[in-house]
Length: 229
Image (cartoon, rainbow, N blue to C red; front, side):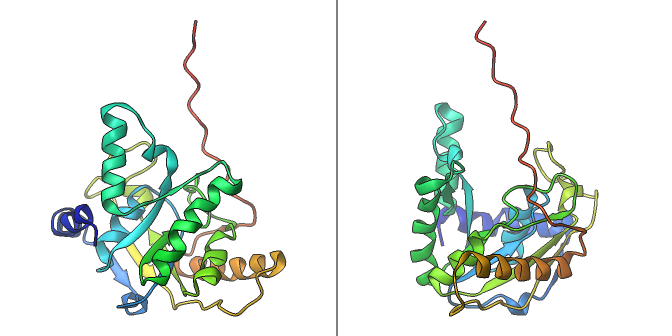
């Protein structure tokens, strides 16, 4: 387990458990050993915090590659923290660059690590569950590991978009784990990947009770570029 992650387990995790008392269901579905992919809905940046709090093993999260490339003190600190936590950089530009995340995740999974993927690709803008992208299923088939569906409930209330940290006493948090999905041995053509991804999203929806939207989540609006005038 990476050093910073270990430190967090003994500092941040107990604090979050004490302050928010998250409810956990289905923890028996989390494997004690071996690789697996956690695929969940994404309501808040707090999802990572509380998922890491309730799972006893190390979780490798995918993070935007921009966070690893920042300059100045803030940029270097961001890179130091994410690297120390064992995060996997993801290129959002697509193409060969985006596959670098797969290249890093497959060996980790085969060596028995746990990797977290948010199939919607971004945080839900309105609390609904959007169509999943096929990356999680493709990764599971390539690495030969199961997918554990995850349902996060209430995180958008304790840390809504724009809030820097979770706010105690603003809502109840529940983390649910579903039965493992084993897609190994199934075809990996485009149609099959879409079908398996829809199966996975249906299991996530069962855990969360969210309204399902059969289209991809809209990209978050980017802040306007600074004027050069």
